[in-house]
Image (cartoon, rainbow, N blue to C red; front, side, top):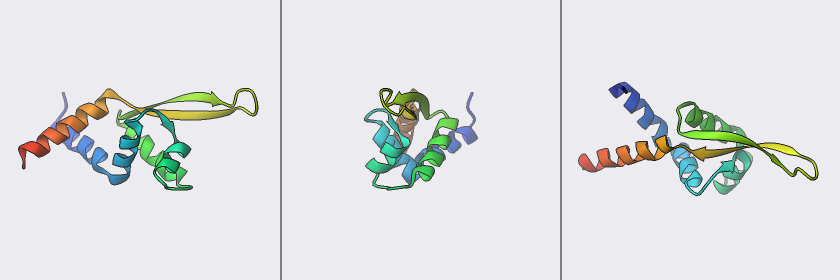
Amino acid sequence: MKTQSDIYSEDYILIHPLRRRIINLLQNGEAYITKIARKLEMGSKDRLIGFHLKVLEKNGFVTGRYDLENPNTVPIIVRYYCLTPKTNETLRRLAENLQENI
């Protein structure tokens, strides 16, 4: 069972502005770090995006999988990220709590 402290910690993770932008982008489907950075117009901020994806993944909000890009030419291993059901459940709970407190 989650404690109140666990719930506040999850809320804190999801309210970070850049993480919210990443989550909003991943609502449309999976993406890899460079694509996320491009879509968020963050240029060469791959390391920053990667850091926040690791935080989200460590806390169960995203999951990643590796895939091979360009298998017929020079293959590149790419890690794709997508949202987990926990993300939408937590966002829904956050929204409900906000509505109750308005």
